[in-house]
Amino acid sequence: MLFSRRAPEDDTVVAMLASAIRRDISFGALCPDEKLKIDDLRKRYGGSNHSMRESLRMLVSEGMVEATSQRGFRVTSATEQDLADILFVRLEVEKLALSLAIEHGSVEWEAAVIAAHHQMKRCETVVQRDPDDASALEWDEACRAYTLTLVSACGSPRLIEMTGRFYNQSRRFRLARLREGRVDFDARGRRHTALVAALIDRDVPAALVLLEEDTRADLRG
Image (cartoon, rainbow, N blue to C red; front, side):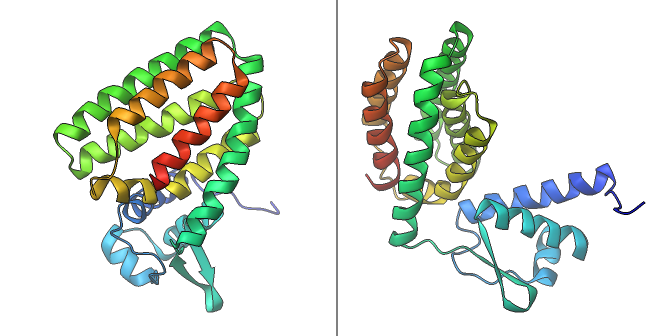
């Protein structure tokens, strides 16, 4: 055999390690520009040298981690310039995907959007009442599911994948705002309700305006 295949359990370990590191980057437990030493990460998260390197390579492909010289890794920067760049690209991708989703979306897609919106609102109620790491993570995952559901009918797997990737890159900015108490949940709720209504009405211009307003407010206020 020319190319060997990893065992399924290896893929599972890599995915679990990547998930744990991704979470800690998002919550600020691993700081921007922090060097990620394999031995230190193994002590903290477990896994072998190989599986840890594979998990870091996965996070490099997502833009959460950067490869450095001499086969090293570090957490990606989180400057105002980085945020501006993420925001610009994320909006370009999501606006295109949402336009296509509104054009092609079925009644089942509308129902899925309504359900994802409802779940997100439930999580917002919890995180406002008890803003610990568990509720924050559940809220953020519900926000991610809602975002991906909005574009799920666009017909382009690559646009959906890019939406998820740039959401992941922006989540630490959003979670920082949550930690600092700078999320206006009332205004956020009004924007989401209006956006869902625009989707159901198939009003593309209104939906795109609301999407941009919400994404900018979510990350910058």
